[in-house]
Length: 471
Ligand code: PFF
Image (cartoon, rainbow, N blue to C red):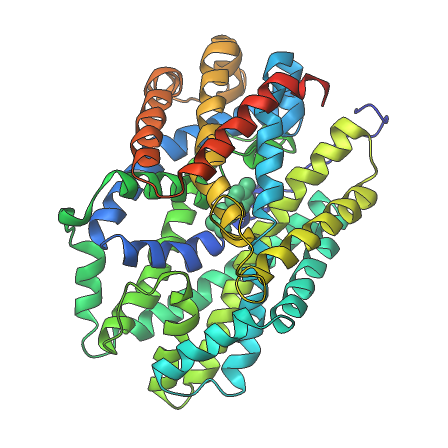
């Protein structure tokens, strides 16, 4: 029971939970961001570092988030607060990260919806023209805003329906749809003549391009992609029943997320090389390359392109729903707000942030704060600072402030299921991962250009640490 006397919501089934958690993990991070980061960071070497971070750091943190969430039965802030009031700030940083990510994520979600329509109605042109079309589209002051609004309305609709009725149902239908579409497109791409160069780029590491910034990019991407470091998996874990095996669920979700990212790589790079397009084109990569690939294919190309953007929209939606849920769950748990009211209030503020983020790419591109526009501000602050620090704080909290035997009981369901790696996991979380994140963060921050933004982010965390006991 919570303070309002209502029973806490629960997932309806195991598969429902896995689809929802994997739905949160698999998103724009996998299909939009992973390919362009891989392209910009030299391919195979980046992927190797990324995979190491995912399976050593990411999987351990996801297991910890599930354990803390289910053990406390509370969302991000409540989970920390219920064990130690001094740690409330760590949960607050999480909710703040969710909020900030929702300041740009729906903008890209809106692009994805727009490109379903655009694929079918006239993107069939030369790659340069498609690049120009994308540039003109995202800098237009009105059109992307309308698509972003549509994307946010879909979120509001799903989250307002609640955990089992909305989020879980959406995940169960949308996730299999997404995987099927990606597999079909990957097969088509890999069977093109000249596709082998793409596979080589993806899987043959070139370490000459690796710097401190590459490690920070890979770490940030691991957190972003697995939805870690901001209490999302704590929140989802809090809706889990006591019979679920947490380590095995964490492994399944991590494996699905990694599989989806690699699949997206396979859907894009072989075809990209087959058509002789440059892999380093940045955030526009999927929006320029994918339509170009399919346009060059002729025939049913545009239809496949539309399918790809359906997949991207679907992936984005099941993730943004989880971001919104982190904020909504905080308002429900800690502020006693009714679900619908929490959804409407938080999404209204998100619309305003998204408008700023979208306009920062065009009409308001001259307006900057600490050297960046609103879109980059929300993105860099979360991806490069808040998520990694959120993950570090979670590890320190779990390793040093939660009773070890309580953790063992939580992860083995009171001794009824086995978790043979418990001691290894515990030592990773308590000692190794906090130190590893700290090293990567320091090396990354030294080699990053937006120093002002970094200092600002760290100052925010410090101030929250001082004042957030009241939240
Ligand atoms: N994991 C999502 C993606 O890869 O697109 C983004 C995300 C969702 C990040 C939820 C963080 C989060 F809590």
